[in-house]
Image (cartoon, rainbow, N blue to C red; front, top):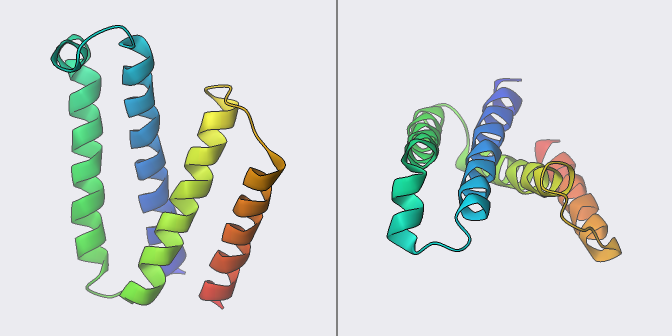
Length: 114
């Protein structure tokens, strides 16, 4: 059960980080790179801090979790969550192939966790 908690926590924070970075990109689409970072410094700092949290928590979790289980679970879940955020929060389109890909990811996650 702890494996599922760790994977869901890591995937959720990583998906949130990607949503923040997408927000920065949308707000700054006409700006140069440095201007984009400075005009959204608080969001950029939050995103970098969350990435740091994921790195530290993942490192700590590997003390008692199997790498061969935790990494695929949390990365697969994060891909699915980022996909959902893109669709439901940012209004990005969806195709049948993308749905098939997410279905295969979910199937792979289930098979890995058995």
